[in-house]
Image (cartoon, rainbow, N blue to C red; front, side):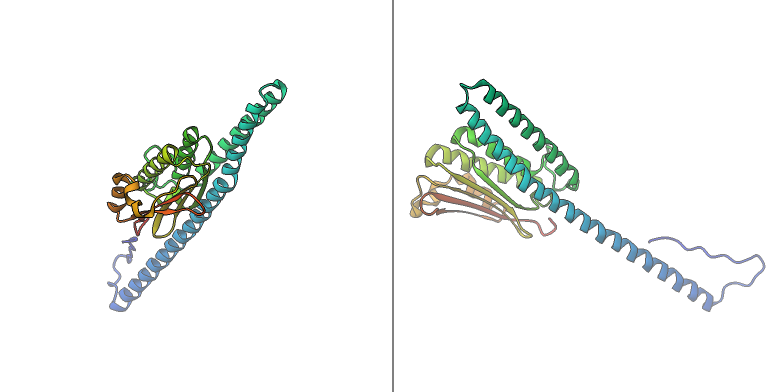
Length: 255
């Protein structure tokens, strides 16, 4: 029920006839229809605004934060090479601090732009994009270099808590095994959320895999994480050398 229309007559006047009642009912139906159309229009406008905000937030994160993060890593490496020149080291440290501050500002803007949907927010309040950046950053300590990271789609607003946790766990395991066994010099990480599926790809050079032993080369737990969610996990050779791991699971229809 969208509302109540109350109609009354003056004391002593005759009751409303059938024609008048039908006219009043018709007016009430038209008013209800107008309210419903207005509500649908507002909902459509809110969806457009939410979509634009999410797209802008994604662009800011992909195009700005990642480049600033990479620039900061390069400067930190350069700082180590200038250890014998204190003035240069001090100046590099100042630039790195400025980059870190710029990243914080952009991330706060991204959080402000991203819709607050409790169904698709992580339990810690941190979006999946931020968690991916943090996970690949931690892996650089064991790999000896920073993995390249590419993120596509509405990862923060379309992927629910449980799927985000599973993806991070798979990524952590893949990067750990790469550091232990692959002797890689480059690692490319890609996370993508489409309308129907969530996909994680980790491609590393170095020691490749024997295609006939691809399944046994991956812990059973990673396969279980995929199959329990109705998805798949595959290993394939990466040309010219190396291995590509791909983990794909379906997203809920109402995601």
